[in-house]
Length: 433
Ligand SMILES: Nc1ncnc2c1ncn2[C@@H]1O[C@H](COP(=O)(O)OP(=O)(O)O)[C@@H](O)[C@H]1O
Ligand SMILES: [Mg+2]
Image (cartoon, rainbow, N blue to C red; front, top):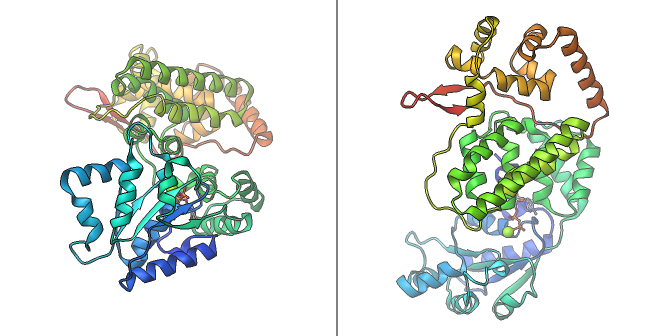
């Protein structure tokens, strides 16, 4: 789970920064509580400072209902059912106040929401329920006609020391072991953006996810379905899979999800750029590049589609790995190691032998982690890779040295045991890790 989700403010007092503006919002909400009809609020300011969170906080704090609408929802409903009119004018069924959120009004797409502002305008004028609109830029032409209908609340960047205190308190709650210096660095890089700071805190401490990781199918669904940069990128923090393996999964499933040739071409282009970065990372141990490669293979692939595909897609196990597997077992000792691995991997011995190639590639990438993860001996690793034990020891030593000098970015560590589940119907691996 993302920290930004877990720590989504549940009351206005949990929103840090912009104290005066928060007080105004509380007064506005209390007026509504007393039955007074107030102007809609337009909360504007930079991203990641809590604008949208205000609506969610109000919902929890005052036990209001929350209805999120965009321009076309409003238009459609006014045109077809007239339900929004009703929604806006009356209390909800249960007598609760119904807060309406029109998020990011300045980002309405000019084609899809054409003529959206007049619709919103008339809606704002007639509403008898509280409405909150959010925007980045108060002076955006698109919202010129809405401005005068709203009370305006400006959110500014949150100051560094507040964010710092906030991150420290969360690090404590989450048992994140992170130095003050790194927290300071995170805060200064993200100048005033609370959301980005939280995401960074999470990115630098993958262990937060120990028991909250998402499986590869959910991760793929997010990357291939979403068109939101951050959502796609954040998958790399939560997916319970090695970077290289996840790339193979994405590779395999792009053409299953995407149908337009252009989308597919773009997606593969981004994936191959990720490959190029990964090549450099391996060669020169530039772990700093991992960020670019990760962004390209998640957000890059996600944003390669023009539009979401609204369909169910069955995702498949990477065929590359299956092919590697079918070149199979030349050596008798394979069995022995398989038996050992069997303790940690669920699935038939044969499938485990097939996965030797994968294990080899993981060992090549990170010997120490790989050995620990699969609970191998040095001799096993030597055998799997076809090299001598001395060579394995040498590689491990080099890894230690290069890590000592390496950059702060922490590599993602596999934390769960691999689970191979055999699907009886077509005898294919349907789930991995
Ligand atoms: N001022 C804040 N105080 C506490 N958390 C915040 C604040 N601003 C952002 N966040 C965190 O970032 C997430 C996203 O914030 P959001 O309200 O969507 O930002 P905005 O709408 O201004 O872009 C929230 O769920 C919360 O975890
Ligand atoms: Mg927002």
